Length: 236
Image (cartoon, rainbow, N blue to C red):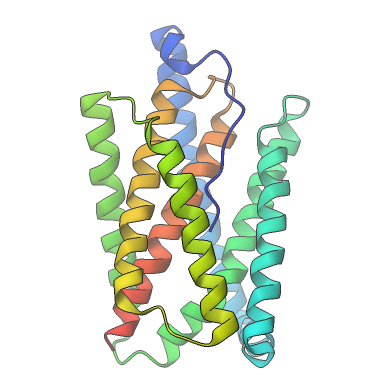
């Protein structure tokens, strides 16, 4: 999962209170819409049988297949982010967000497939979602209540992201399991990313960048959900 960066200009922190409030409202409404769209896409994939086909192709490819999927996902994420921060077209911004949501839905298919058909508890996905939502709301409330600027976390997240990606690629190439400790560390990483991106919503994004702001928040929430679900399924 990628830690997005945005092209910052005159931030919402310096805007008029009404404009700032409207920006925050648009951002979180769009985030909720992105999460809803993600759920709908997953429901369609599993109901139509597309999820089984996607999972079969990825599983059949083994480690090489996962590397190709990961590389393609990173490429799509890069393009989607460029479109989402575009100053030339609002439609292009929304298209970037839409493409990213679909890409996330596809890359989640194998994990959700495993959770649905191999985990011993049928409600494991729902429980992981509730925990993710609770952590997200708690972190968000912390930023909004303290109004602290956590931009100093940017370099830390960049280094941590590259390190995590290196471990993931190495595990795929050499066939070792990263285990629950890595998953817990990634939950902490995702929580830190939410803290950083929520701070950026208050202090860094322009008031016309609600699409890009919603995308980076969605990316962090998806990363958090991924590893919380990994923890839940690894215990079954």
